Length: 333
Image (cartoon, rainbow, N blue to C red; front, side):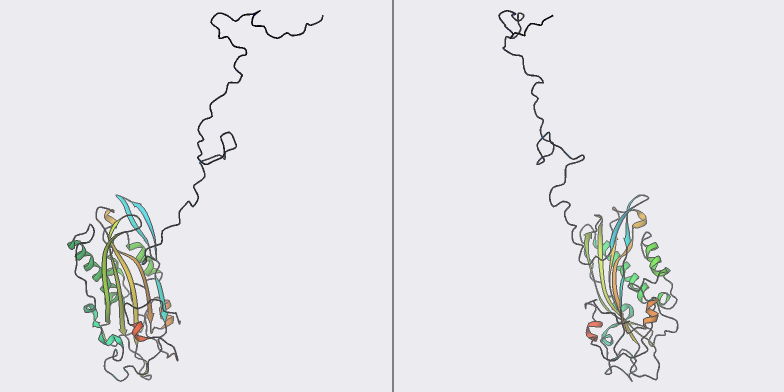
């Protein structure tokens, strides 16, 4: 059987049904589809390979982290506690130590062990902790500021002047002044001998030549927000604590003066922002150095006077005893 050749379609011979659109050729198949909008702005043309997942971030993302506040030296964690958000503190205290270079022009032979040092002009004990005049700041009233300053003053006394801390090495009276949620971390600082930047304890055998240390410093406050957005009163205390210890009588050039210079940041959160267990005083940050110390005792977190003279050196007593001086003191232990 022989097949005939195909002939071209003749619309005159086979007319389309009535009503059927007359056209020379049907619409091409498949019909042309509209191209949907490109979901990835700035990406490759639609239809080309697209990586799986969300579009890539714009150039320069993520932005660099903001610079920490000038006085911040610690990390902040915002933790969940019963009743809401609470402030959780990670303190990293820095304790710089320096063996004192004995000043031969000091107060040897004087009844006042502080004679010949800048501490001779400092106030005695608690009289050196002078509070600024309270005023309303931010969302805090003057009464709240007054209460905060009083709490800070009590904490300074308990940590640097109270015999319970100095002689008995009992941190509990100090810890009782702090917010409940701040106490466990501070208690760990005492257990690990990392408390030196905010508290003083004497080594065995260390005895004060005069019972009252000399104190000089400054206290400032402001309203601010921490990294978690909590409203807080922030108090910065910058102090010099000078202790006069008994030293061997066979070396008159050893006057037994030990100086601790600290700068501490304290915070109190607004009562509407945190859980009840986080209300109260927080030790937020701290840095300190000690001068004229026994290095072996200080490694254990304890104060004791230097008992051996170190020749030479360039320490400026005016700088060491200055509560506004630099904390960048090289360690000589």
